[in-house]
Length: 291
Image 1 (spheres, rainbow, N blue to C red):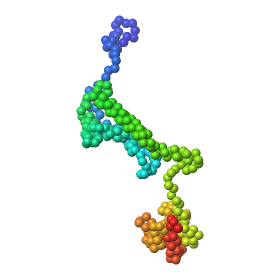
Image 2 (image 1 turned 60 degrees about the vertical axis):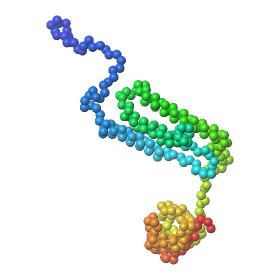
Image 3 (image 1 turned 90 degrees about the horizontal axis):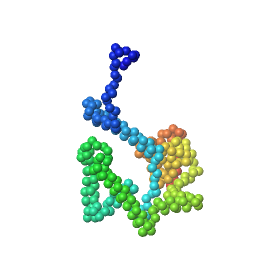
Image 4 (image 1 turned 30 degrees about the vertical axis):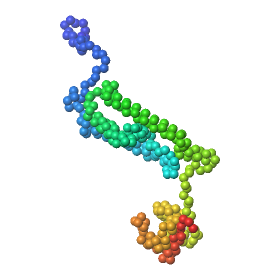
């Protein structure tokens, strides 16, 4: 490069003006053009895929914990309904209605066609080994993919449409719709919106019995609560339906199924006598659901 006008100074040209400016996108060479620079599938690439899978799994777990799936209505075995599977199986449900996938051709429909479909899916990486990844340059694979998607959409829509027609032809209303309509009517009237059977609360039998004081003094309230509905331990309301006086005394002295330790010594140390414990067991045996 010249700094001043001097015919004796050497001139150095930077670059080469003979190199023409490139036009268009030049596809970069693949990893095979750089020996030693390629990425090993195991463990490099596989470890990356596993890490992405772990992140996705944790995200799904967070969603399921923060937003639990709502419980639907309890099943009614006496209801007259037309059973259908969940929406993501509707296309299979409709597929099995086809003439050559049911009846005399049930083996072909369930084993033959599905076996070919899933077998082709498993063999796809071995059959399609080309480097081309643009879908419009892979006519066979792309055509099969679009055909599969179109078939699933068509069969799903056909299954749902036929179900609606069958319900209308038989004059049936889906049970979930009936319950929602009934709940809306009850809500407007200020009535309970649930048709679930409410469990009747079991009352304490002979609440004024002196054994109630013994129950509290013995320390039973720590596990079974003062109202006998249970805290760390089970509820004692209605316990007389399961155990008689002798059985209750045995539980107090020996414990119960490794879930409840023996409480006899604890009661004695609390200042109770054998007569008090016998009175407590007799009172607990009276705690029955129906009197």
